[in-house]
Image 1 (cartoon, rainbow, N blue to C red):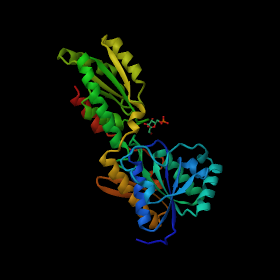
Image 2: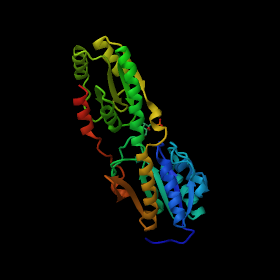
Image 3: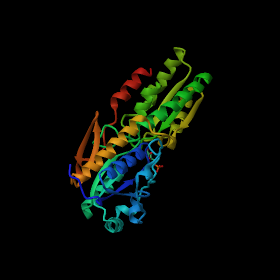
Image 4: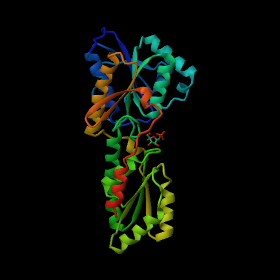
Length: 326
Ligand code: F6P
C-alpha cells in the first residue's frame, strides 16, 4: 500500500438516516487513518456540515467510548442544498480550505447519489460505505445498522407476543424499511409471525383472514402480523382484520425505535472492517468507490456501478415466514 505524507487530509461524513454501527465505522476510520499518519477531519451534520464549514480535526480521543453507541457522533442529516450545484460548490470550497484530498462517506442510497454527483462535478475522491437499517443498498449483502434494527424489532415482538397470548389478541406491527421488505421479512421469520406484508409482493388480506380463521379453529390464541411501512398503514390493515373477523386487533408502530440502541456485535464488526478498508481504498488512489460485503469478503466497486440501483429483498425469508407461520 502507498504510504502518504503525514498530512494527507481526509474527511469523514455520516449522512441520511442514522444507523447503529456508524460510530464503529467512524472510530475505525479515525484510528486506522491516524495509524497511517493521516490528518482526519470530522464533518458534522452530513453534507450540510460540509456546505456550512462544520469541520473539526479528529484525534484518537475523539472516538473513545463510541463503539457501543447507536446514532452517529458526527450527527447526520438529509441536505437538500447539497443536491444543487451551488450547494456542492460551497462544499467544495470547504474541502479546499482544509486541503481535503478525499472523503469517506457513510450512508444510504441518497447519500451515495450525492457522493457520486459531488465526485463527477468537482473531482473530489470519495469512498462510500453502506449504512441503512433498510438494507436496500445495491452492491452489499449487509448495510451497517440492519442487524441491530432487526434484532431490536424481534425483541419488541417477543414482548408483544407475551401480552398477545395473555389476551388472545391479534397484533399488527408496522416496521420500517421505506420501500423495502428486507426488515419485515427477516423480522417475521425470526419472531415466528403468523403473516407478513411486504411492498414487493401482492397484498393478500383474504389469505390472511382465512389463516386467522383456521388458526382459531386449531386453538391458536395470538397472532402477529408484520407490515412493512412501504405497504400501507398498520391501522388500515388492523381495521380490515377487525371488520372481517370481529376479533380485537391492536396496532404497534415500531418507528424510530428501530434506528436507535447499542449496535449488535455484527454491526460493530461490519462498521470497523468497512471503516478501515475505506482508508486503504482512499490511499490506494481510487477516485470514486463503494465498499460492500459479500459473505465475509469486502468487495470494492466503482461508485457508478452502485448508484441508482437497489438490492433485492430476501424473498426466501418472506416465503419461509409464510410457510412456518401457518
Ligand atoms: O432509511 C431509514 C429510515 O429509517 C426508513 O426506514 C424510514 O422510512 C425513514 O428512514 C424515516 O426517515 P425519517 O427519520 O426522516 O423520518
